Length: 407
Image 1: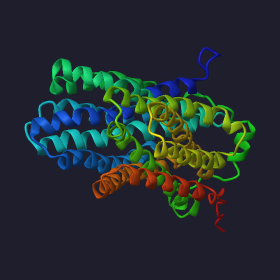
Image 2 (image 1 turned 180 degrees about the vertical axis):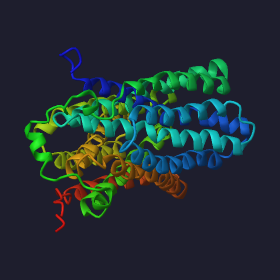
Image 3 (image 1 turned 135 degrees about the vertical axis):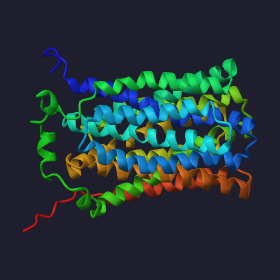
């Protein structure tokens, strides 16, 4: 306890939230800086987009590496020095004189550093909470949409006021300042002579049905791969929508300023959804059933903009899509911890997280190909909706595994 009053795990949740805002900063700032980098280096859109693809590949490797380290090393230093790699990447990008330098700094360094900023806080929080674990992870991961609300206008203001080079430097300074919250993290409650929150609760009793699994045992379980597929497909849907929603709105006759409100509504809905599903609905539904509800209604919300393209429908869609998309995100680390225990959760979740990196490559590519083929956003959105409905069905196949006892 902290001052015999506040459980220190909640301090780690706040620190985790701040660290995950950095992950959101990396994600959302890319689209702001890209046009200026394209212009400065005379890049085609394809080459410019390849910076993001390479970053995602590096992040996938970083997820696995960070997950393996967190199982055996101090989370504070791993998170700080990992994130510092991304901060230096932003800083050095301001001085890049060639495309290959930009690939190293803006893609490789930022991608590697970013891999440490999501996996590690979520893994540590899973160790600190048994009861209210989903809520704690939901609050922490809400850092992504919170970041999305402020980083776009802030980065735009910096670029317009000082130029993109100085904006990258200022972003790196802000990044490093927030990164210092990593030193509030303690790897395990035992490091402070504490026990996980709610260890004696009914949730804990459910978690002890399976002893800790090794990573190899988890990777041989069919439920792990069903969840991985659901995670991958879910982010394909999300990225198809968020990458194209702004341009879709403009193409439909909405002014740019008004069109920017739809992605903003996704961010607002995401904040609400993470807290609502992880804090309220986990008391009503099983976590695997929450996955079904979120994927099903995420898909259903897309129907709204397939048939009605007005400002009100775009904003309503954005909020609803954000609510249901964000509802399934914190469920996966919660389920992974419940299914496979905490001993190897770092490497297990690290491998699991590569599903996002793969989706970050395939989602935009698929939507771009379909748009070029049809000159319409209708087909990409129909695909996104269909994939989400399919994912909802896949979640019904996820069952609690039973560890085989060796004799």
